[in-house]
Image (cartoon, rainbow over the protein chains, first blue to last red):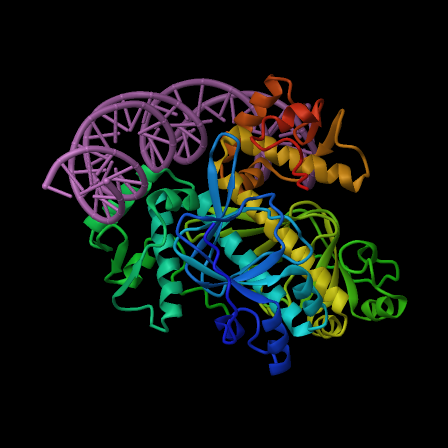
Length: 243
Length: 243
DNA sequence: GCGCGCTATTGATCTCGATCAAGGTTGTCG
DNA sequence: CGACAACCTTGATCGAGATCAATAGCGCGC
């Protein structure tokens, strides 16, 4: 396994996932338990059931969490994008297969010291709770997609979510033309959306034919009119601004 | 809305969801912010988007969390069984419709004082994190069901999960014969499993015809051989004991 | 008891997405 | 360059579950 380990004093994680409110002494302490791991696209980070003696935060690249049934049916239950967190306190063994779907760098923390650190840093525990609740909301939104949306709506929803997230990372607005690289193969998209890869391919072709998206190569998606694509997701289009 | 409010010094919640590790002074304090609310089967606890100025724990009965699309397609994204928790810190507005699917009693805590209490009671914050992570795991298991299981497997999975949970509440073993009342109509089951009510009905009839379950009336399910039913869920049957 | 509303069952038919199958594209390595 | 592998697209057909429709049981109030 290609696992580069290095130390670094300026982790992007500080400013994103965990430590927006950490003080310098706390950051120092986090640094002592921190190391980086790199994975190539396709590599497995951990298998479900493996001992996992670290928690981690995604620095760059994308990983997927998936579950597989004995007969091979697979469901991706979550994507880890930059700043997303992996691992749960108090759990020694991985629950899901974690796979790098693109080249991936993670900032890892050894579990024991990290848990000890969390125990005496309340705002870090709060931040963990906040992140977990956000993930729970995302999972529940995905349940609506898996249970009730058509193939076309599923594809449109996926593109909207990836597009929005991608724009957020680049600090761009999500209106007007938007372009991004799909971090998933057709098969991975199928496993995320509860479809077959053929259906994914056909629906992408249909959206292309209708001008809702353009393809540059197989992987790069251009969305000329983000609002128009959102109208295909089946969701309320007000972006979920409640209150 | 039938909303009985009473105070009570011996809340079952103490021993379950929140306070297994609370000390007597903390329990006193929790009591000052606690009140009970009762709902009849079918009543709505809150609508998505409503202001919700309390958090709550289910004392008895069952509630469902659901999302509905404009055209009426509905997905139940979670069931709240006794001891389950509702509401998230820092969120003033409900994200999902919450409906009593049976007669329901909830133990409620006013949000502001509860949040303040949480902020200075670290083990409560930890307990919240633990519960949220468990819910996340449950949601992800359900994603596999929604995305990849057949109608038959979905029904079998539902019965296994309700049966197991019901047995746990009654402190019974989950082998040999097991009987419980279905807390959901056929329609609610359909909305939970991502099916139509006709398909639910047909699959239940099929399981009955094959002797995997018996029906006593419309709602009471008897499972003569729990292992045999588990074999129909498509899951590994070792009950997920990893490590 | 009778009629009404709600829930559940069952049948007939249709349809969306799965499955099976055949190419086409792209990239890599000798 | 050519061969091979991985990934993607498209077509033909199939089938699980949706949809449409009719009927049946089951309280509940009058």
